Length: 312
Image (cartoon, rainbow, N blue to C red):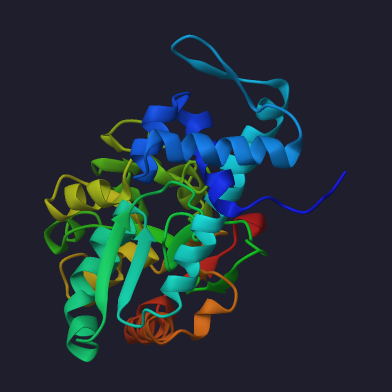
């Protein structure tokens, strides 16, 4: 039996007919006549030496051979389409599609984008605020920024600054709750978005680091970190602020961190892209800009004593 592949046009005709289970609908998708599509499928069957469809009165169904071919053909054309889009993207030096979590997008990226746009007016930025795991090739995404305590060896991965948490609040609230003892009386805000970390970083672990057995349990809980921070900015209470999401508010005085002790989260934000793509002009420019922006607020981390949970 010959292993020579049949013509691609015949395989395309079969793939469309197998998906629609209709020669007429497949012909319409491929913009050919039903007779032309039927001819392509017959030529494919002759090449194979077996029927691919059973022709019924007003319908068709896959034969055993057709069923064996259909899934592989569909996967093959999907792979080709993905590869073609990837090849097209290598020729695009002006568009940059970035995915990041909603909190990082709202609290880190959005407030700083004016500076990037001013420095790179030739780059068109597109954002997808999502925590879903994405296939960068399939989903046409150039850069992903993800917060995790795991590695991604199949991608180019650049860990960003060390992430820590420490209590943050408005300046007015800090006048009332500037000691560990007084903080036990403060309204507490819970950011549940980091509950997945192991070991868990929580109010209880922070108070333990301060040699206090206090474990707060009451207060509003938020599944999104940016919502918890918005509540703190509104004066609702005190929240354990994560470095990347609070440094701009701390630097500009909207929030204060009255205590010099912070806890390492054991996780970091990472800059991710396909291996080999980190040198594309727009990706390299975006990466370098992020590193420069992180450096602008590095002094805030230098004022803190950052403890590892394992040492507590």
